[in-house]
Image 1 (cartoon, rainbow, N blue to C red):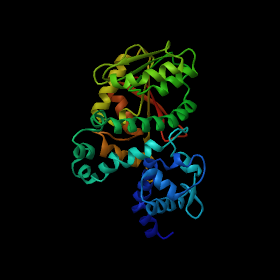
Image 2: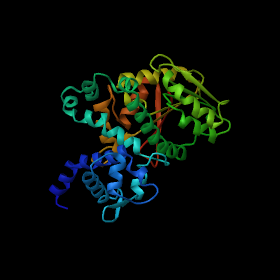
Image 3: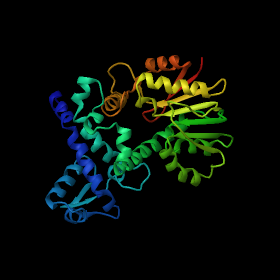
Image 4: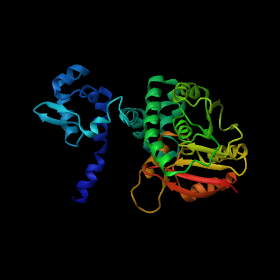
Length: 333
């Protein structure tokens, strides 16, 4: 492929992502779960224009999302399956989230380039966390998207790292508790503390009750910039530090340091930016953090070593997983 053609395809990349978004938002994959349908039928079911629906499906079919079986009839493909609502590892909510507020914020990228500040807050008048609290429908989509991404990552983390020697694990900013619940279910001697803000912990109750481990998992509310539950011999932070500036990340880590028992183990689960020119999702996620989070950033191994050192930890090793995240392990120095 000539380099200019390759570049042109990159330039037009948002055409693809926006078409996927529309298919997800309209629930096309759900409508096709029982078999192929005529594009006019799908247009009627979604209250959209018949000609536009056919053209959208034809474009998506050309890249393997849906397939045209006969003129105007379309069916699911393996890729399209993950745009359904209730399938394992669904990416429906993810495709909607990235194509709505995130997409608009990326359109304001120049603001971040000129100021170093996040474009999301400049556009919406609130940072991303405040925005999703104030806009419940968008907030629910965000929560579901983060859950769906986490499920994929959690499987990879459990396979890559040996948690068996941990007695009490504190999940700092652990959200709905899926990671911690999975770990406690897999290790019969482990107890845990799920720590997050009150509204988040409230949403975790059902999952914890259904998991059958409520006797070994304590739910605690609070602010990790102020205090963190004490007494854990290991503290895990999954996709927490990348939301914050170096100063804020160090403050969180220092609170972990003070809370954990000796010798204490720190487990940070994040992407790690590799050196050189090799393509890696972390390098573009880093720009996303610039755009949408106040002070957010992805980091290199050297940058994590500096963060750990500033908080009193020594980075001992980085364990990659089959997903994009790694387990960054530290101990009290």
